[in-house]
Length: 336
Image 1 (cartoon, rainbow, N blue to C red):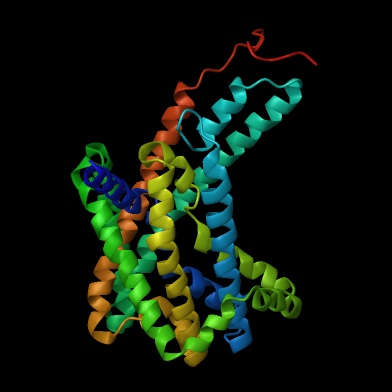
Image 2 (tube, rainbow, N blue to C red; image 1 turned 60 degrees about the vertical axis):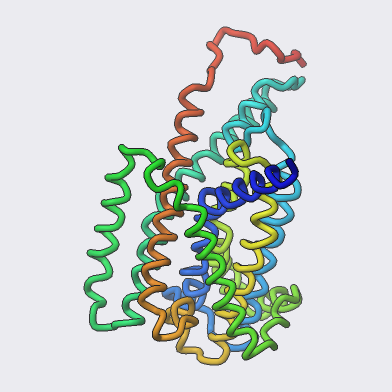
């Protein structure tokens, strides 16, 4: 019985890898590159700057995902369901003395939903494009094919929506398990060659980066936040997998793999500043770059599918939500 329960928990954790962590798991493709290659506000790839950015990325992931979502937000559920609309429904049914407070909280829930839609708009395009751009590292002569290939992949992805996710859903978990394992191996291999990059885990480097660069450091946060896009999926998909499998997958595989990869990219940039052109793919040995492009493309398709499915679920929840009539007094509202 215990063995069966362990297998069930393992299956749920594997499923969570494919559905919950697809978006945040593909952020290493573009997050560090965006910080150091942004037009007009690019950060100079010096050692102090690189360590500062890596520190910001690591502590953003730690505080926003590990502390905020995994430790606190996931404790707030609506009969086991998570997500901004489920939380908004919970607010709508609770007892509040002030009608204005309830309206404000519901408005904030709607705002949060709109932000998720914004994430759903940019994630497929930026993720798939970043994956396909790896072709220019392996074969620079085919740079002109990056955009057509990206458009073809995205067109195919959206054309498949009419058939649902069941067709490829069983592949999501195993593919993402391979993806995170490769992320960790690539980053770990670079760290083993230059272990001094581990010093960037100290928050003092992030603080010093802000003190030394001011406005540029503030602008860089717009790129650093790309490292945590998709974190809301941990909460939104809690009803599908439960808290424990999501937490287990995060702490045992996803968080360590992301940390190792970002550290590895930072080490590579310090060692070779020209690597800012594409630090993710330049971590990959030359013989493995084309297979890595294929794996990254599949991973970004999975991430995009997860966001698209999440947007659909959010829309369905919103459409089925009960909106009281203008003259209807909320049943649980206590007048002030």
